[in-house]
Image (cartoon, rainbow, N blue to C red; front, side, top):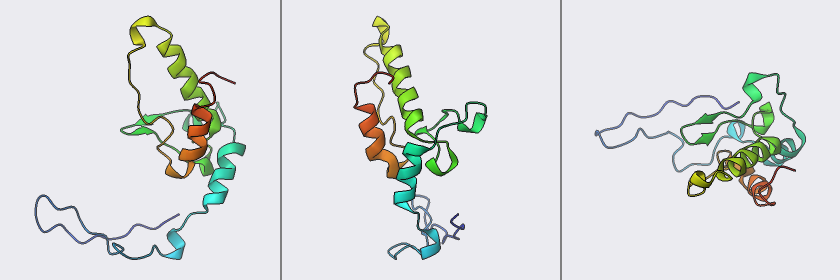
Length: 122
């Protein structure tokens, strides 16, 4: 896993700290294997007995990684099913949910494909 980098402190209240890697290529040890993540996205099945592998939401959507069984196609299908069931209630049809399936940017394309496959549990 990537190591933590020390950042330079902000000079004013409105500036964010600056990473020493800003404007530079990421070091090799911080790179991920995108092909492996996409493969695991489709092949991993969540263990419903493991609370860490259940769908959970943070401030910007579902949190997880295909490498840990915590973000995969089954999660997106479950989220899609829940949204469809929620929207079947007439008073919920106007609800707006944005970004489902995009928390893991590497898996955004396969997640979008799953979401767009009809909106029903397969």
